[in-house]
Every structure is written in structure tokens, then in C-alpha cells.
Image (tube, rainbow, N blue to C red; front, side, top):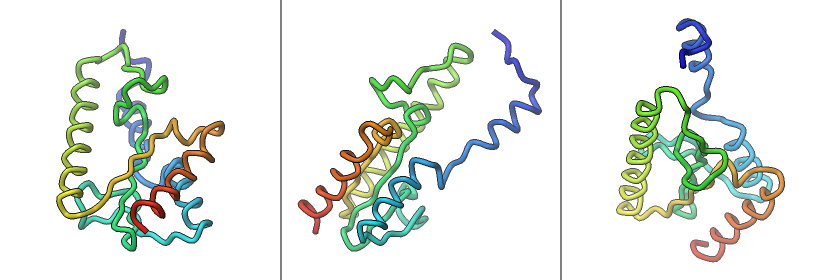
Length: 141
């Protein structure tokens, strides 16, 4: 099936996909701040440039989009029917990069939390965000 958009329009649409300060990231950051946690964002000197860095707790948080990071078993991750092989390689590359960053962070002594976009949907958001704080206070603080 051919793309329904001209290349210029498709290029513009893809350029508007945010890589940082996404709505899910802002939800997590707002919750952490409201609960007294202070953090840095997108710290470039750490592997994977984590979305949220809680230096006091030696913990980083990645807020992953279910589609872009290939969340296995998630209803929000559906492989496109066009250019399937290209998308599969792109998502596998992202997953490989994610695993590498997590391993490197662990070697440096950082704990890694990954929260998925689907875990921030309205019905489950409060519980999952509370779980982050419980983890931080129980295992790190």
C-alpha cells in the first residue's frame, strides 16, 4: 500500500514527533516534583541520556513510548502493515540501544526504572506512579 501523503508532508509529520518533553514524561516529572523529588532531565553524560535522573537515589527513569520502543504484549504496539521490515529493524535497533544503555548504567552503579506509556493511562496511572516512589524509598532511599 502506498503512503497517502506526499514525501514533503510525511517528512513534516515525522519531524513533529517529539523525542523529549513528551506528555508521558511530563506526567511522571510533575508527579515526582509534587512528591518532593528533585531531578535532572536528559542528562547527556549518562548512557542512553535518561529522561529523568534522580542523582540522590542513584536512579534513572526512562519513559518509553510503547510503539517506538516495541513494548512486547502491549495493545498499543502494533507493527505497521506498510514497510514492515523497515519498522521492525528500526524498533529492534531502539530495543538494542535501550538494553545497552541499561547495562552500562548498571555497571556504573545506577538503578534503572522503565515506565511504559501504557502504564500512564488514566485507569492505571496513579498506582504505577506510586509504585515508583515506593521503589525509590524502599530499595534506594
